[in-house]
Image 1 (cartoon, rainbow, N blue to C red):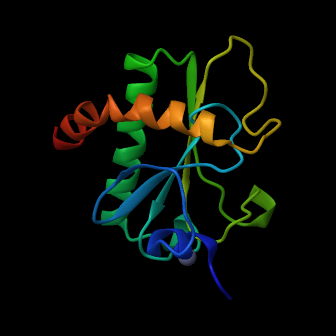
Image 2: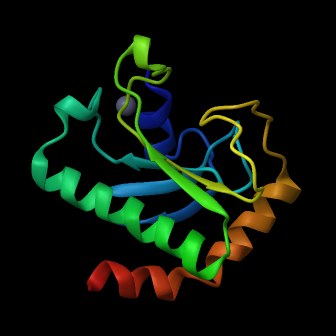
Length: 144
Ligand SMILES: [Zn+2]
């Protein structure tokens, strides 16, 4: 069965890309919970967190931590969630492992996966340009 994230990794399906390296892409979630909701997607296909080799897990969660630090420390997010869903009962919908990084911009807690909307070009450009200014910072954090 065709995997939508494998098609995004190969470029068959376009995506709004924030960052990429040899192991992973960081893209905008097409149906974000909040502005700047990111997905970390390994280039190789693994179904769930239980399938990811530990060395790759180190890199992907490190990347999640760096993105979250920038949201909180540089971009003034009021909060951030780092979450992965493994298995349908946990809410997994796309069976190619991914980590959600969800920044919060409001004060009250509204659940982790609240109402979602489809991201449009204007919102995407806003988030992408925000991240273009922070890419050096991200690279430095990943080298620490
Ligand atoms: Zn896949």
